[in-house]
Image (tube, rainbow over all chains, first blue to last red):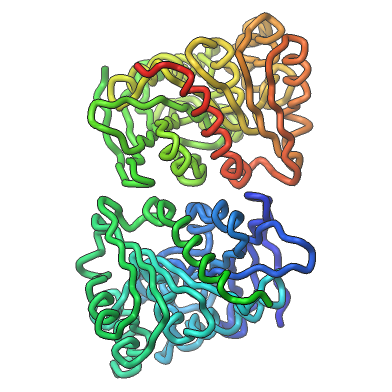
Length: 286
Length: 286
């Protein structure tokens, strides 16, 4: 396990908000992530909640604007926020520098297409390497995890949650991309990273996963009805239909007047943390 | 009254987080400020809480990182955050471009020294022009106001609160500069804006104001004990001594392990909003 470097550690809400980096074997790059650890007794471990961020974001956006610390401190849950792509010299980017592919837009897949396959291995990074690192480095009980995310990160939370239903006590999302195979952001990203064979896309498309038999006990999704991306890119009605067909308990809350921003996320963050905490309490501590 | 331009309005925590600008007659520049208005009935007015920001900040820092909206929505209090200096073409800055004077460092005074006297009139802006604009433009009950601030803005909140004890139901601060005449930041700023006659500084120095007879019913101050600026620039012990001598009810809370950042501010923001809300409730609505 590569050494974890401390970028910064600051006291906040009775705990420690840290930013760290490490040499990732999955991506072959230095990766940065943030962790909030609430106050806890020596030797005690706390459950872990993942927050996967959206297009253009790094770990910093939710760390600064997510308003999760008060709720995480109250419920005594660690929050981990990874970056959204590999970065640095030699990391391929969108040929036109677009915001929706390449840097800041890893889409939580392991790319198979050149030149992205070399570094864009965010699936392995977020599902294997970083969880192992968190478990070894922090006061984390990896037997109790939940996952949430926003937009592209909501897609990541849904697809990872559906792939590892036993790992996560809860899966939730803010304004997620629910069916990337059917929307422009997703078609560009999955095509660019995974190639033209759409069969390979299905395990990175929450609606397709559910159609193919993936199940989770329950999903919580908040979606602003004034979100500019709602009709073209997000399409929560596709998730609703898939969950109804599959018998998945989906709570989909259309929030009147809310947009796609962190003002929306921060408004409902405490609800999501409380929802996850309730589910995490049903699991036995390590 | 000049027209108020809407820079942005976003739904958040059931209300509206707006950013606005207007042509200020006080500063002779376009000034930007933010206002959070909680959900309210048509025709209803809500009390107003001011947040004055610190060196290098604009209205954006607290708006994005302050974590005040949940508390302001719960207590139904408007929050107004002004910028910290005039800005734009022709506005004089620190000759060396230092962070602690000039742009982003107006220190809430009306400058009398050239070349700053032309635009640096933040005292008049924050105590006269902007309050009038807020009262005319928003659902604000200007008979019920509180004021708080951080660092240089804590200095602003204390000096304005001590100057207008009947206007504000409460005065609070995060890591304030309490005695600018006695610390490097303040000596540079008050000397630069007001000139060498230290008698003119006293009404912009909270400790000196208290020594000269200014009084407020109560003060709440939070101060991190890991704040890098504590010993040299902030010196809360001077405020404590002045309040003890004057019989002012000061609650000064030294917060172990906290620094000077918004991670500190956001941790105690809900406490401050609740403290102000309790005092504002004792005043009759307009």
